[in-house]
Amino acid sequence: MIAYLKGAARAIGSNYVIIVPHEAPGLGYRLTLPVAMLLGIREGETVEFFVHEHQRDDGRELYGFSSHENLELAEKLLTVSGVGPKIAQTLVGIGAEKVTGAIRAGDPNVFLAVSGIGKKRAQQIILELKGTIDTQNLDGGAKDDLTLALEQLGYGGKEINETLRKIPRSGSTEERLRAALGLMGR
Image 1 (cartoon, rainbow, N blue to C red):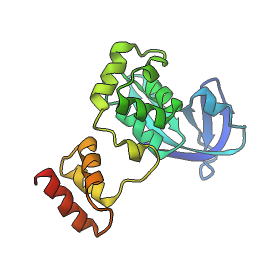
Image 2: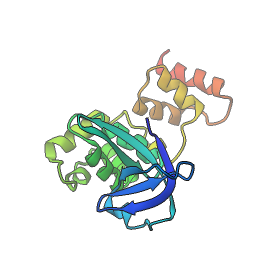
Image 3: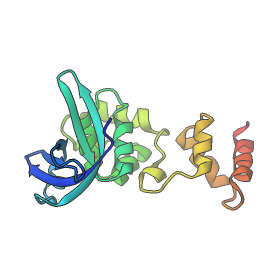
């Protein structure tokens, strides 16, 4: 599975760039990108992207994202029935902050601006992802050990966020985990 690409932009098409890794000059990868990202690329310059590899009946497609957080958001969006990689990439292109904010607020208007998403699908995205997306982490911050531990115990993003607001920010991870579990009833 291809998860990251860095190399020279060899050719630029209407919705893709061909990247030639510096370590393998005879090999090129076609990476689908939104037009807004393509406009900032010049042939020959070094570019790097996080990649979602999509398997189809007739082959594989690679979709590029500017950050790991954007890739994670796209992969969350792909869990919603009817949301494919092109729609997920377009939504991420709007901005992770706008998309996660719309999910948090239950506002379908951000999604309705994307071709291929109607009111029903927008509501489905909100319904399925509300509480499962840790919006603070997708907005650019890294998950801390406490959040990861609570996720591994089966707690959802909404419940974790509410609990983390109620416990002290100081102390060791173990002390904070005990406090969080005490509030959560385990």
